[in-house]
Length: 182
Image (cartoon, rainbow, N blue to C red; front, side, top):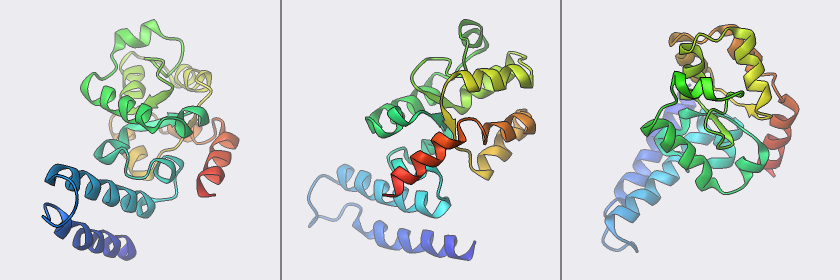
């Protein structure tokens, strides 16, 4: 934990002074975005060695916690797709009506599962078995941090569902992590 704090502090000291520096190329906004991307990538590597943090680094910024499931093609494809999925989850969260229109946990069929989709299934009254079946039906793998699991459990998602998510398409998750580290 102390190492993580030290890395975060050092990242702040390295990136902070660059924001708005007149001698650097680009506008102040572009400089801030680049600094945020660097900080996000560093944070992703410090937070853990999860697949999404390793592949996407700082691309998702503060929205990284929304993304919990993906298939390898989408994850390693256009990284903008992951960003769009997160922005959609933030601006138009999934609803109970979306759950009723879908047969999988990827309620909007964008190739990703986000926390709002999982929470919508819970709000729709789906039991653990149905939620797990819908998660499996996505043909995606899931990558949750301990903090995400705790937050989702605090919002009503069963620990059993969260535990099972770790094992859904685990081989795909491990292959994606191996690919990302190369």
